[in-house]
Length: 424
Image 1: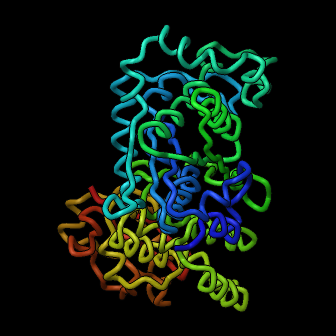
Image 2 (image 1 turned 180 degrees about the horizontal axis):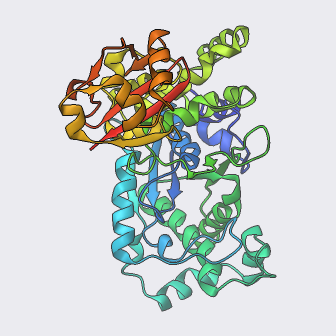
């Protein structure tokens, strides 16, 4: 069994830990938890650091607990926030929790000696009254102690409600409950959670003289200092309805060379020697993007499926001219629209195609891809026109057999000049 702390160190995933944490792991398997915020019905790729922390935790022989915060989601974590968040209703929270559970189940093993568990803190808070909470829990921590936390200090000028102020106490009680009832003796999270996590260790010490540990991972940023997981289009989500497998794959494939070594350590389950071998091979030919392809393949297959990975890989080859006609014809509508986002498009009459549409007419009158019949004929004579990646002759007619997913025809002049005909 590998030592979890040593595993985090070589993966550059250790930011801070309380004294005695390394000794805890030297004594045998440990039960530990990480909390997940249920304010959306999908985890984002930014959450993947903590998902992988639990994954590495379990792979080193320990028992992971993923806590989805049905109760804390009703309050809102102020950590790293400049303003109070909108609070969600019970129905929305429950929907979000179920969606996130299904995503977590793709990474954690729920069978065996160190089977993972998913818990919802609403289960132990729903029967606890306010007076009971402030009497039995709140009395153990002073206002001065709670005010000293960065999540509170950083909001003093703009102000924060009592609701958000109490958040760290609620999260602290989560740790106490899991320690008391499930033998959980370490809480983990991102470095911005250090204040909330250590509130839990302090609460356990003061309530029952318990000794537990805390450990945090660094917040992942790009080499240029910008936040990982954010794009111009917004978050990269694990839900395929929010971020398609193709876009998810492309996001990872576009990782900068300066970041790929660090990201592979965090997001891959590959061992140290294999990662270092991939890095060495990558450095010999960076333009091949071997490391990016390896990481993108592993994570896309894990988050989505091996079939979705194959489609994403095939789709990625389309714009670079290496995809076969068969691979192109197998793409579904969502992937087609993702791949050809920004490519000029036009609608074409379905009846015209069903009757057999002359290629010159398709290139000009039907789509406007080329400016005139003369230009279309010259391009055809030069053998530079393709339909769905296959060269066509001047006497070609497009038919229903050319439709991708029953609706699209890809026109192309030369290697990089694309046009998407939408047949309807």
